[in-house]
Amino acid sequence: MTTPFLKTMELILKFFESPRGNSIFELVWENREWAPTSSVSGSANRKNYTMLRKLAYRPPETIVDYKYDNNGGPAGIVHGAIQADGTRKEVPIPISKLAIFVFDPESGDAFRGTPLLRSAYRNWFYKDRFYAIDGVQKERHGVGVPDIELQPGYDAEDKKAAIEMAKNLRTNENAYIVRNPKMKVSFAELSGNPVDALVSAEHHDTMIMKNIMVQFLNMAASGGRATSATAQDTFLKSMEYIANSICDVYNLYVIPPLVAANFKTNRFPELNCKGIGQAKDLAMFASAMYNLYKANALQFDDATLLWIRETIDAPRTLPPGGTGISPGTTAPAVPDQPPVPPTSPKQPEQPTASNGKPELPPFKGKVPQGFNLGKGPGEG
Image (cartoon, rainbow, N blue to C red; front, side):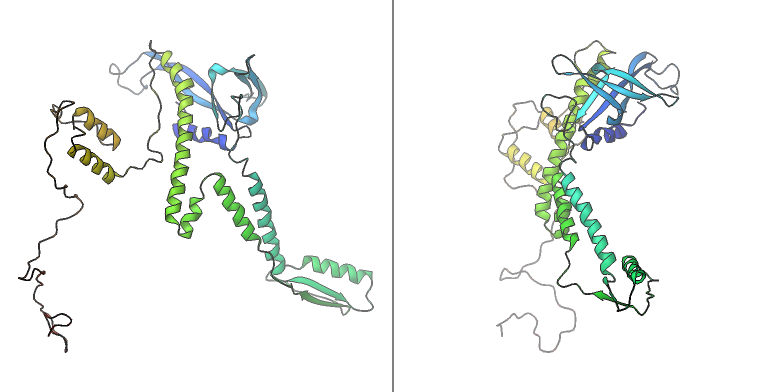
């Protein structure tokens, strides 16, 4: 493919912000040799195959129309393609050449979804306004609100100059005032406390984070680590759902036509995701396996060992000849004592006195005055 997979994933995830909540791609095919041209002649597969050249992203701004069939299903799109001479040409693309990724699809419409950022727009709107208000407060209250009192005998020109002066007073290193005797300039003192716009901005910022389920970022900063971890698990589970929905589109509309075009089979490989939000505690897993083995509820035959290795993402290779244990074979006896954890180093044994208490090594330092060695509190 001419486009890296991670770049394609970035374009797929644009359905979070797309106006229709979708990301539409055209399947671009080509016939070419399986092996690259740099392969050694005679040792590479030189057969021609139908290959997927790329998933070409079709931005929503370039889609002129969405086509439906008589049953309301998707029939294709009309793409406004930009030609080499800069002109725009409307190109119809049938549904058989499309891969459509939709976030939170609306009922009965395969093209339309709900963008993730739509529900956060109101909070973003007010947050943006509160930041603007805070900027005005910092700029105006840095010097205060100008209060210009016109003295008796002023004329229209004096009033106009006073208004212009009041409008242009700002906080900077070269600020100064030049006035005539008919003006008295001061700064009004605000009664009470001004509204802190940043508090409201922070509230809407938190609501935006809750909208996309990443409020645990703020929780970690405030010290709620346990609550933050729980919220993070929920976020990762939701990301697993998104990843599975992307895999479903590949498994239905991308992989089958690619395989069927080259091989006579009705069995197709599948794209799957693994390990999203499923952090494994190997210590707990090992303890569970040990308890099942000890209770003769589990035998470590070849199939079981392969499953365990797959579960912990270990290499899936067994010793030559396997374990020699057949399924259903009774497990050998296991000692009652639990195994010593490998991470716990064995502590050296301490000598004991006749009274059963640990015997301390002799003290070789200088004893301070008033201290008696070998005697505890209350002993003579």
